[in-house]
Amino acid sequence: MSFCLHLPCNRPEWLDFTERRNELYAVISGTLFAIGWWIIIDCSVQHPSDIKALHAIGVISTLSLVMVNLVSNAQVRGESSYTEAACGPSGARAWLFIGFVMGFGALLGSTWVLIQNSFEAPSVSLFLQNSFIFASSMAYKFGRKESDSWGS
View 1 (cartoon, helix red, strand yellow):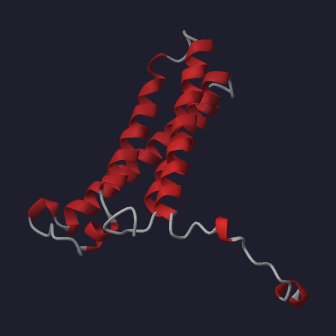
View 2 (spheres, rainbow, N blue to C red):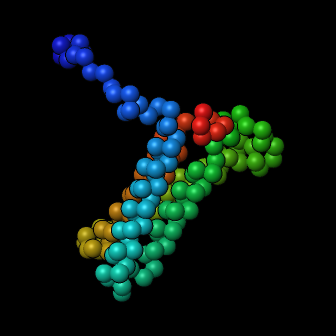
């Protein structure tokens, strides 16, 4: 094993994404989100009578993505300039918690529909949609580094 540690393995300069980390995770997150909605739209076209009200689960998952990513980590830690009343760290933590609960709830709801409908195409599409949206939310929230601007 120690032989592998001494192999010369330099990363090419063009492969260094540390300076463009925020842009990279924004693209990854947006792609995952688009794939999730693309899957459910395709299933709605193929099976128009099977989906009906199940779109609400995807909408809740999308709302969760927005809620989770509206709150910065600095606001949760109490390091931002908004420290008064409901906009303080307690309000930010509550908002973030509700967003995570909605995301997990949508993912669990789509899993329930998947198991209840015995792995039929619309339920698989719904589960994949919510999985991609949840992964998108996590990538965008925890993949980026906090800074004042995109260029720094």
